[in-house]
Image (cartoon, rainbow, N blue to C red; front, side, top):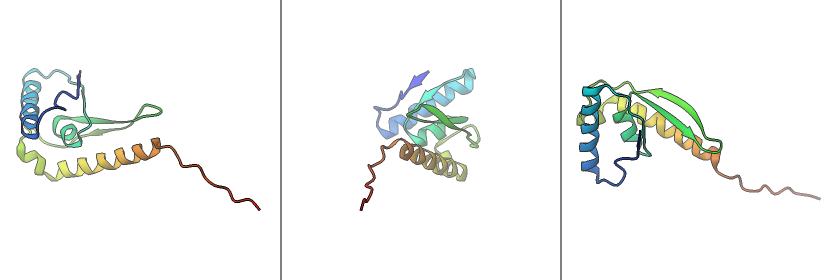
Length: 110
């Protein structure tokens, strides 16, 4: 279980550590659960991404990632990568809007 392990790293080091994590996974084939707020990181590192919404906390979609292995720097430019990040971004925006408090409505009275 990894909770935002690369969150405090600069972009280049973050990519290097992501590649290193994938190499470890490919060697060991151990299940890794990774929590991240980075859409690119989620797509690059995952075989499947589970998108969660808050209030109430629930998984709103489990999305398989169709990128081939091994994943490399070139994976970021693949069509499947763009499709997955676009879809995840849309899901997260919808989930975010659903948790925002609604402004009070004014009712006109006569």
